[in-house]
Length: 391
Image (cartoon, rainbow, N blue to C red; front, side, top):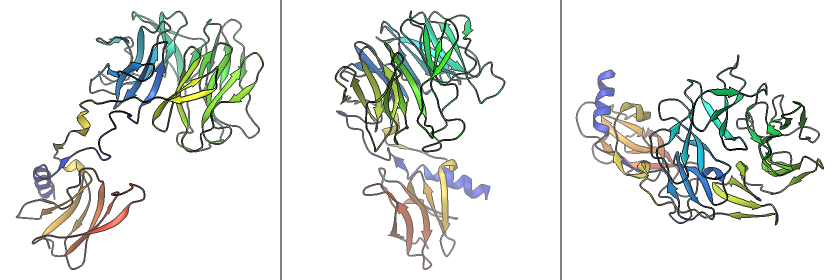
């Protein structure tokens, strides 16, 4: 069996040139931009696991990082000159900082536990991040700060927190005590529903943003003036809400019903958020959201057609009635390989389509399989003639 597997791995590279499953991105209005951040003049976001920056209107996008590691959680400094973010450059998730104009990122944290960027202190001298480095259980994270110049890390007095954001005067912090669990359970209403607490840094008192009867998930707080903006599923799908810390009034600001609002951050008079794979700017004064068009045309390595090899890419398999060949699902293509002698054959050759689960017909003349060709909705079963002496 090991010998046959080795043979399959050695020959599959000959027949499986691949490209992205879903085609080439729109270079004028690119989708799947995530985790946006906002300054007075720029936006930052994650695309294809790299950090990008663009004009506030989405113009002139520039890639700031190109390392093989995954970048995430960008946040602008208060003056907009720097971006703090997470990266996996050295095998661990740590805090880095880079000028908005570009350059070599500077690493700020070095602990083997992951450190997740949450923001800056109001004076812009320190980066706020969450980590499990000092907790007794992996159920909790705590808040820490580190200087933008690097050096010692300081733990805040809040016992445990996941998301967090300072008020502009530094006298309060909005934070969620526990990590989000609703990503696994839609409309989750269990004992660890996400709640937002308003913490007074002077007397250490805490107020909670009120919840409706039956509970809800409030998360991702972002402070602006006397208001805390946040995401909530209190009325169904996650939408953008605001809570005024003086009047205690809660307002729903968007009304999406198809896809949730995710990953929001606040700027001066505006909120940026992701929804349905696009970035949106919400103007606080007018109450209007504008979808940004960001066009990215770059050399994404994942989209370049290339040859691949390796038995790790083999998933389902079906032996022909005679046992002479085996049909395989190999990286979304249906490939047949000989059991002893012969050449491998890619019988579908559809780089932009995902096929899987091949099955030979009893007479060995056809192969049935599933494909997402067409609308890429529910998989449809297809059959293909087994060309040549495949039985």
